[in-house]
Image (cartoon, rainbow, N blue to C red; front, side, top):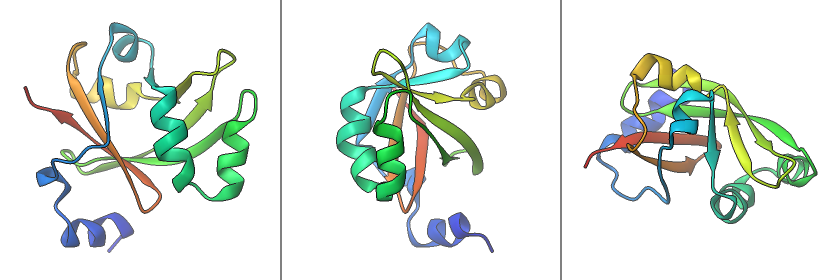
Length: 126
């Protein structure tokens, strides 16, 4: 049994209503292949929870690290690159792995939560 499956037995993330990072998807998020994550959310929520070496690497000019990203509705784990852009913004590269298979439209809400070294996400209803 893999790490995520054991975790899911302890906590049903589909029922979790506390998604600390919430974002409405833009046309760019859906069509560009990358998800822009607000600077505040990355620097105040994700980076403090990263190992020190990864946090330092990401905080550098054009820093990049690979992270696991888990779709709680589809129960699929992806490996994506979190990148600090030249303009200081952060993007999750290879996001099209999600948008192409799920047919997600701009305007939908997404919730994200960093748990045990994995960025969990779900499409929010409403």
